[in-house]
Image (cartoon, rainbow, N blue to C red; front, side):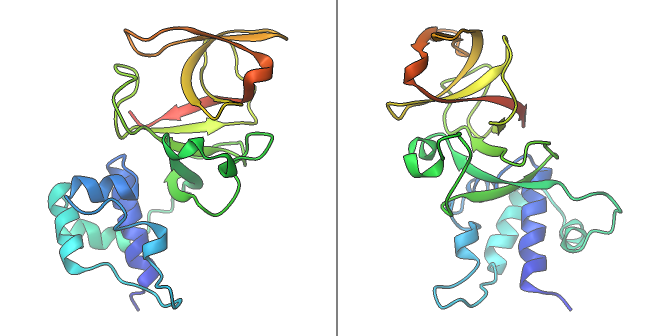
Length: 210
């Protein structure tokens, strides 16, 4: 019997195949970015909601996917281990204080989810790049997996949250007891030096969908 969960899982797998989030898949198909969000899959009354046939047709066309292939995504029988599902936000929303605890771990329920390659850190989370300010390293739509439990090393790309509420994506040049030195990823960007007492968290970027 085909279930509501099967269809939504197939949409998530289609997004993953195309290195997109569910919202990124919706945007590519010309739909509202929230069309496939987790919050849209259940009504306010707690009833399951099915995606429309129109939205399915649009994502198949946008990704040049045949209907028969989509059917195969409904209940794949590949014998492979399912990828991890990690919390997902975008760079703009990552500035919200309530999304992280004091250790820089994701907290709360206001997160989306995305299935991506297995990561050893149980506190890992994903961030979607929403502009092209970090070209040529990262572009709009790229997904970054961030590991707050994995100690960053010199030369690593990192996500830094400041006590002032900023979220920065940089390359770590130096980390001392008093300061961290950061290199811009953009060609025309500026390097940055921050006192340790202005750093709320420093986390290593361990994977990017490029």
